[in-house]
Amino acid sequence: MPATRRIDGVLLAVAVVWGSSYLTAKTATDALPVLTVLFLRHAIAALACVPVLRGPGAPSRDERRCGGLLGLTQAAVLVLETYGVAHTSAGNAGLIISLTLVLTPVLDRAPLPGRFFLAAGVCLAGVALLVSGNGLHAPGAGDLLMLAAAMARAGHVVLVGRVTAGRSLRPLPLTAVQSVVGAVLFLGPAAPGLPALSRTAPGTWAQLLYLALCCGLFAFLAQTWAIQRTSATRAGLLLGTEPVWALLVGVGLGGEHLTVLAALGAALVVTGTYWGRSIESARRSGAATTAPLSAATDLSQAR
Image (cartoon, rainbow, N blue to C red; front, top):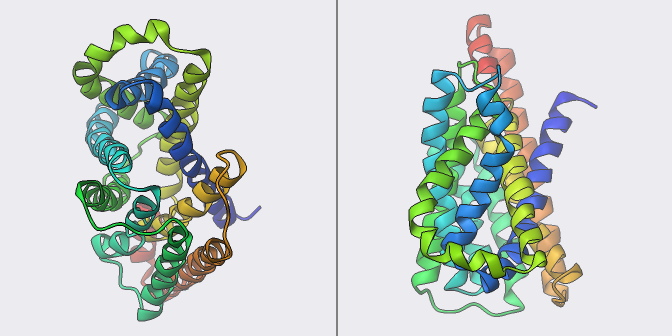
């Protein structure tokens, strides 16, 4: 399998996992407080990373510093997303978070042609159709939180690319540090709800394990690994298919109904994503062939 397709496949896997996380997190937060869920999501992942943190491959000073910074931004994204979904409709949340598609290239300052933004517009139109079946509500506190989450997520994606550029950072130690940072941040606020864990059902623990190990550890690790090998803009497009996977999980496991408009919206999101990906890929290929050798080398190291 070509390297580009392998990287894109990893990013799509992250999108699938994150798409499934909405239904999982919604069910888990019905049983436990939001901050308790966020703490356990990071703490379980941190415990799984103990061999990495204490072994011969322990994080270097640079990895601890960069992982600490990325852990802060990742925690901010999760807080905003979780509280945003709790205070708005799933439809509004899915539409607003998709603005990451537009915000990422803006924050990344990528020199992209107008066709790219047209492709991003197709994605946004698709997400609008995805959520139209449930109806859109007037903007409220939850909507503003989701807008902040979209901005934070775009900034996090760009930041991963920037702080890892030109550095010999290993994804696993970097992810381990992020998990520890999140656990430490949420420990204090989550402490009042921890005694209730003794009465937590096995099903809820299974959901917490999935959130921690799949939606957390795997997703953070895979995202960091992939963004080190591609552009933040390309990663933002592929991760932007998350609403489609959220819809499919909701229909297949959550008992939601798929309308004709929602199906059309899903098709538009996929079409817009792959169209934008091809535009961004062509831009990078053109830059690589026209730039001097030294510049091309710097670009490859930045990816």
